[in-house]
Image 1: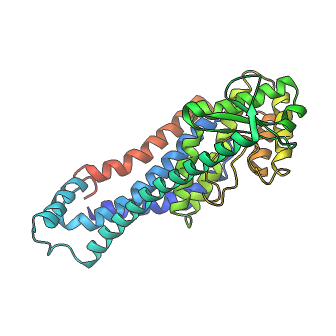
Image 2 (image 1 turned 90 degrees about the vertical axis):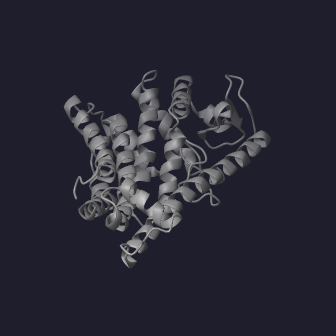
Image 3 (image 1 turned 90 degrees about the horizontal axis):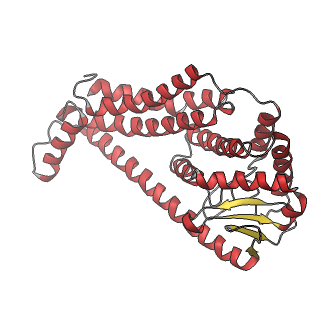
Length: 329
């Protein structure tokens, strides 16, 4: 598995640095946000798998020709006192590093989930005190706030969309419908799960450029996906005006900081999702408005299929290298 470990190491470095940097500068994701979202997920998963797999295969190379055989031999060494003379210092170091990294990633994922859930519980308690149910429909709360604010708070059957009095006063009926459809799209498409996964990834490996770039890109792409749903029932002009009005409130309500975006939660960490939806950062808002003002056609079908094939290949390559005996030697 010597060459396998080196190939996986090269793949991990590529997916951690040059690939996300180049991808983050591409213009086509705004034309096909769903396809771009799949590619970002593949980059993240394949990068993590390659990083851990490179250390595992190097550490197990002396005792097996693939991952499964190596793990069986390692189990024999650990539990049945089999001879371990084939494992040198660097092999043991690589195995320890792989185990620690895996534990770190899993622990960070669970810890991020716990903090997000705690934040959401606290958020619901505050809504119970400061907001009231909307008379226009179930699942909507109205916040007594002059700034125009809109966001959704995921929670399964308890999911709610929160609007402010200032927003209701500022929007026309068609604009309000666009906002509600946009927020409901976040809930129905479970965007909070994507935000959770990429936030945890960034928390676990904040020094990797790919974690920051991926989180920023995913935040922008989910807004575009929700915009596309809103465009099915309202015009571009209506949606643009609604985005501009809501975005104007994101800087005017520092205690909320959720207008069409994520909250500022110091106990969770920057960028971690407690609520979902909306304008987000100024850069995200500008990208959304620019996309709506100058609409571009979706990627041609052959290009979309090529991107999907590349996404599948990114996931299949490290997986095959880890489990197929002697694929690279």
